[in-house]
Length: 108
Ligand code: HEM
Image 1 (cartoon, rainbow, N blue to C red):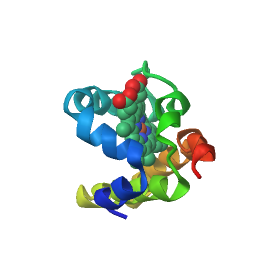
Image 2 (cartoon, helix red, strand yellow):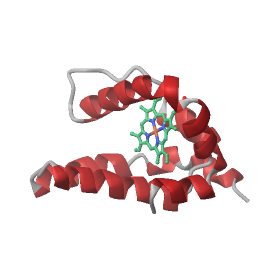
Image 3 (cartoon, protein in one colour):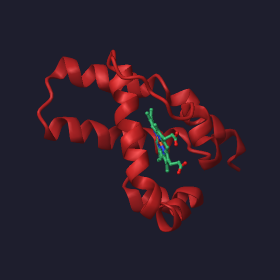
């Protein structure tokens, strides 16, 4: 599933990309990086919203989450991350799937 497919299925992501990405994307990139550094063992501490709060209103589904995991896996392959490290990153990401997709209960 590509970005345009997610946008067709998820109107919240579509409108975020159209209306907010222009000014929110730099902060989102910073907070995502900080989150990953914290999950990787620190010493940095993540200071953003909980992932549940940050994503609830997007009503993200399991399929949409898995699509983003696939993009992440491709990026890790692109940078030739060794298999063990790649699996660690993907496992850390997957561990937060329940929090990130909690809002999907509102999807019709
Ligand atoms: C484990 C998986 C994920 C992680 C670690 C993650 C990480 C984050 C972080 C750290 C933030 C910023 C929170 C804040 O503003 O304080 C955020 C917000 C956001 N995430 Fe994720 N995310 C994940 C999954 C996803 C997925 C699957 C999507 C979309 C398909 C997504 C789309 C967004 C968007 C659009 C925002 C911006 C919200 C805003 O403007 O306030 N995220 N995410």
